[in-house]
Length: 163
Image (cartoon, rainbow, N blue to C red):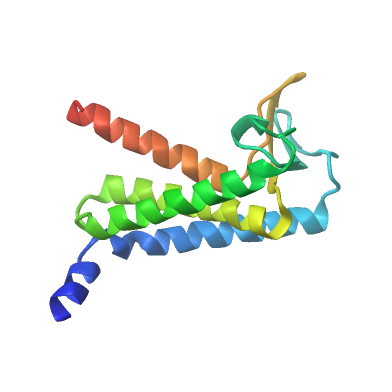
């Protein structure tokens, strides 16, 4: 038992504090947006950045947004499966693999943050709206950002390794 505990405390799980911080920022930002914004009405911050409350019942870039409702269960379940897989990966990862463990914790937090929304609201709360003139990028949130940054970090790591 002691060897098992020692393995966990020296593994990549020590990085989970980062996931907790990201989850707190994600939850707080979404609750703040729900309390202070009106659905679909932009709050202009900069000439290229608005806060615009939007509900996404689909996946990234509103893929499956107009499906009949089955996507809530599939996407929520997929997020929980991915989070479980990442948790196992982190538990087996040496603490010294900083770049990989940070990337995994970002993806883990993002997956849980969006799954939390799906469970509570049957949609994901999005609010960050970048645009250039009339062209708007997909509206997203902190969890989406964490997933994208984490995935990009893993891709860079794998490219550097030549795999």
